[in-house]
Image (tube, rainbow, N blue to C red; front, side, top):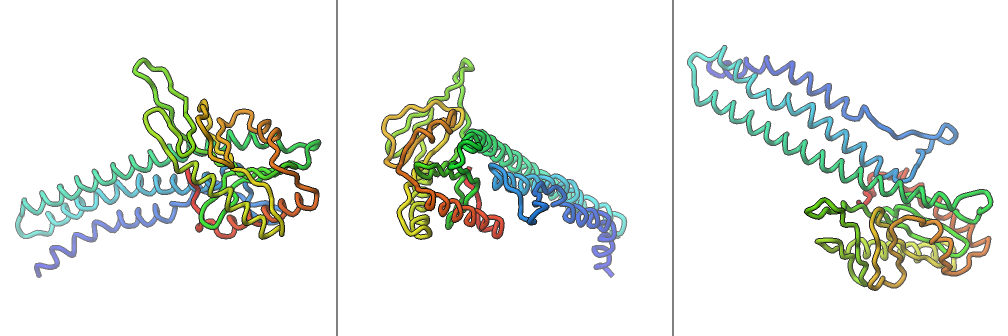
Amino acid sequence: MAWLEYLLPLIFLFPLGAMAVIVIALRNLHDARVRSPFNARPLREPGQALRNRLDRAFATLFLNGALGPIVTLAPLVYGMGRMLFASRQNWIEWALYGALSTVLVLVYCFLLIRDFQHIRRIKLGLACELAVGQELERLVSPEAHPYYVLHDVPTDSDIIDHVAITPHGVFVVETRARTRPFTADGREINVVTVEPERLRFPGWSEHRPLIKTLRASHWLAAWLERHCGQPVPVMGVLALPGWDITCAGTPDGLMVVSGESLADKLQARHLGTLDDALHDKVIEALVERAAELDRNPALYEPSI
């Protein structure tokens, strides 16, 4: 029966299939998320959403790196089986198996390059978030009790990197990581000009970080007013770690900073006055809101 010549070579694919099943089962072996021994809630650090995204990116890299050789060898292994069971040799068929393996190698090479670049971008964003988070942690000290900092606070559709509550207002702090270009002689260009509607980097410009930070601050102001029953002064802060900031006009309700000495800048900025009752109500509402990310992590994806 001619169809047996095509069915019997599948026996040689069983070991490869077993290896593929093991790889898929182990794809989430590395999971850095830990839970508190006191209340079983996930423990959060600055940039936790990006840490979780980095874990998923590494899982994808592992999956593509481990499945790639298995999948690309499958046509060749099947072709070797066909050569054993075939009644006559068809060199066009063998060439097709080789061409299919070549195409699969190119596809997985592309996937691995994409995963590597994706991980580099996430790592850069995480490094910038950690740097800004360390600056914000300086606000929290025993003698400065009114200061409170939360990380990864979800909005309706996104995540606010940091929220700092001071006695003089609430600050929405967004962090953006951008690679600094070099001149032909190797000098680094790290000057960004802030204009009312865009950020002018060396060689390109962006407006989305400004819009996103303003949108987040407006959302938080409206959300806090609904939950606290009175207006709460809120200001957006866009941090660009590693860049020198030149201001040619900043949008109303927004600060653009490099992130260095950020705690001192926020302490010196007075948006209004939060009495003790309002201050505690704001913190309680934001702590509860931040817990939403732990309950529904798949609904939110942080921006880089």
